[in-house]
Length: 51
Image (cartoon, rainbow, N blue to C red; front, side):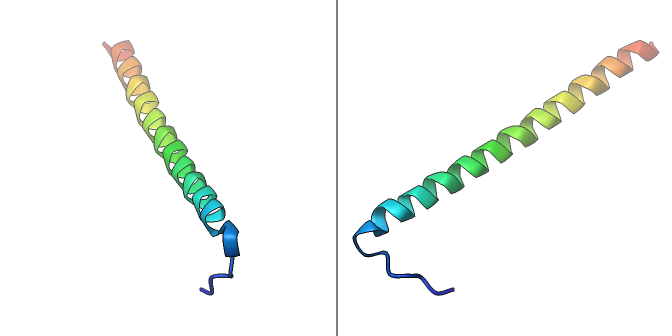
């Protein structure tokens, strides 16, 4: 991959990319964690109805 010459804006652009990537990873992780928690809660609720 060829890196374009960003000149004096390199720090700002690369920082923005870094922050964006960190936010995407964080949002994805939170979404997966919430999915696992909801699935576990639903399984517990459905299990109580059987007894």
